[in-house]
Length: 340
Image (cartoon, rainbow, N blue to C red; front, side, top):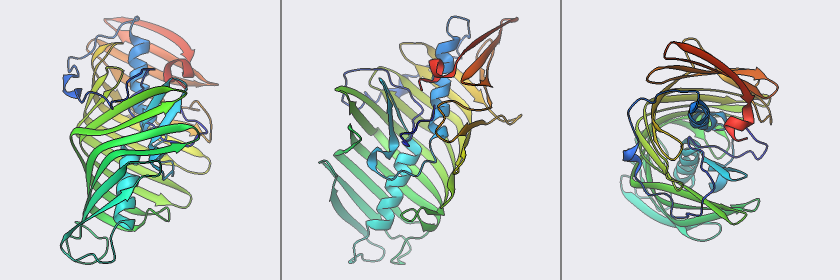
């Protein structure tokens, strides 16, 4: 799943499409009925689950541009809502305060985006310290905010608010510890990407909390959400409950663990499933710039049984389905399921 592009990933894998409207915001339609696991749909369910894992596997990458939240591979796009929003929001907090900031007063400012459009933000110095501290917040509103990196163009629309619960250091220097609450109101924050004439889009809305630790040698991110939804321009809707992820990255590689329930409605299948990568702990481990993990296991619980994805090494994945009193196994290429 990881690539040398050093961009981030999203919980959703988007198929090739021609929509550029950022999704329909209809994530509430995601089906909460537990999915029936079968030999017919297990690869589609695994594909969806690994899309969620892919978010965390690249989430700690220290990219800082708008498109640091976007990864495009062929006809598929993934967005990292966590790091995309956190990096942008923290950057605004640390660079957006005008010299004329009046303590205790919400101050507004507008910036032009690198390739057009704008981002308007309001900063609230809640404790009147004239600096960044606990309780401060920033609200950013993106209007056709565009940037192009390596031939891929991205556009952001929508708004989000970040409330600092704890903060030390500075994301601008790549060091510090931050604990934030992120709120993305409906209709949501959308990112549309164009590569080779194809447009892909995703919209997210809801709330999440995040703990981010940055150092000069790597990063650790802990994210949780219980009221977060997403929709894609290829007709997929998702909703997350009891969702958590832990990702770390260093000079040698990364690890990722994702847990929680994801409800899905889309062309491939509809229904909810629960991811488990703890108790026992089986995080996916990736060597630097490797497309597939070296080790790890993802357990997917459905209505009628369990689908276990076990990394075999050398880019292969064992899929073991225990459902309806029967067991069947299949070995596939990691990239055939994870779209790397």
